Length: 502
Image 1: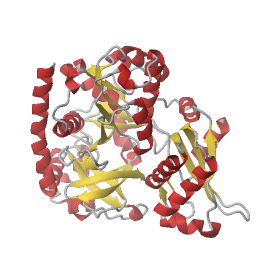
Image 2 (image 1 turned 90 degrees about the horizontal axis):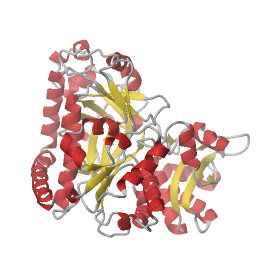
Image 3 (image 1 turned 45 degrees about the vertical axis):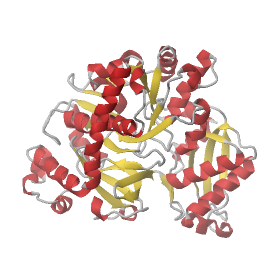
Image 4 (image 1 turned 180 degrees about the vertical axis):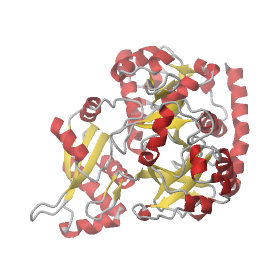
């Protein structure tokens, strides 16, 4: 095993030189991919509709093809689900990643081509390990197994040749045979539908293994970890898996969960690696040990555009190319991919933290913010405030959501929060004050509205009982996988729904 691990580490480090190449020539790499994508799709139905054959530059592409979202592409995708081919992309599409639908309650089916599997998702997985091996050359991860918290896979009944499931399930189903040997639990447990039964079975199956690395969404990883400790009677995960050295996470901001993981894995040498892997593509990997920024991956068959957030509602918004972006500004990501998504707005917002090479951090969702009074509170603001309030009151939060309280008669507006704690604040009122003050410190618009309670009063915060969010997700049939609690909303739908079950 040690020899295999050494060879694997050497092989993975070779890829680092290719990564360094796109870091050095980012615009050339993006331009090359743009032309490759356009020429590949020339004779698809979409390519013929927009005359891709005559598109010679990104500027022509922007002028001719409108920005898309799931609703505008849905008629094409529905035909692909029924088995029609050569619609958005030339190669056969038989896999669809079922999105958890955080931007709406409807499920989304994102086409996954063989190219997007190989050149994007699997390449991202290899690069993630390459970066880890480069940063930690004496690792021993292949001397044991990787514990992967996958979603649930289902067969699409519309057409016997088409399949859909959570992205993680689609990837697990398509992994090469050798990769199956290095992961746990086995596929029959990994792809179970019933999440409560699955957690039990995963815990029982994996406690006997030599787990060296874990990959999963932080919230569900914590649920599994607690189940493992409950069954084994151990104090922390290193008593169960002494060789655990790597945790790969994504989908939600890790910062608020860091303290919980320190308790679950009390080891200063534990390596935490963030990835930005969505149903639509693999976009970013944390490449530096002491920074939580992510390197934007530029050679995965994706052409990027960035829409300044202030233009989100414009009739003719002007997107920026990679060469035009600026530091610390919020942009909505627009992608064109080797899975047939064209100028597609994925719904995430990012800021660039570095321009050479291009590094980003996720700041929120295009639909997940509160701006009922011009305060423009985004998820990044909210999570800075929650982390500060937790630190100052010795609390550990588990989940939260927030929304506006609208003006009523003479009353000014406000924000209403539901927060569930793993460890209660030692002073709840102080927690609320620090939350409020930190929001004022990081967001000048919020601060202006809070001045003398002119438009916003002090936040109203509900201290939710244990398992509130778990039970709410369960009632919606959204346990596990990539399902997560909507953090912020500009309406009261989620908060009122949760309050109704409290």
